[in-house]
Amino acid sequence: MSQWIEVGVCGAHMQGLPLNHQLIALQATYVKTCQTAVGYRLFDVPEKVPPRPGLLKDRTSPYAIELEVWQMPLENFGAFMVQIASPLGIGTLELDDGSSVKGFICECDAVKNAKEISEYGGWKAYIAKTKHV
Image 1 (spheres, helix red, strand yellow):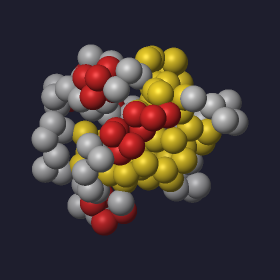
Image 2 (cartoon, one colour):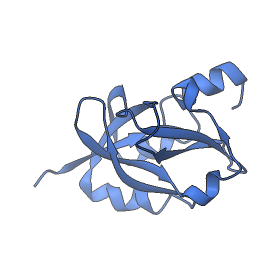
Image 3 (cartoon, rainbow, N blue to C red):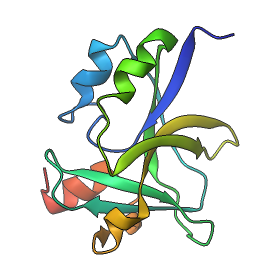
């Protein structure tokens, strides 16, 4: 069994963003920037501080969303999980190369009145164009 787990992050945990320090503190290391498979939607989740997105799987969506893959020691994954507050959680994300990683997903109730930002292709592109963070 592997001593490491790969985690996909698509928002505030990405490099240069406010929650990246949580990954670093748990000895996570950056692996790559890539995209989900086509079939995801991204939303600006209201009332989250710091601001962050919510990622939903929707096979009817024409969008792939940028994310970063980080590798962390398996023994630190539980400590990472307890820092994740609703409406976010961890699920399995399909990547554009056919592989999968554990990564952030969002409860669908949280995005009912949220702004969809899928057309930006990712959180970093959205905040760069809207000066959101």
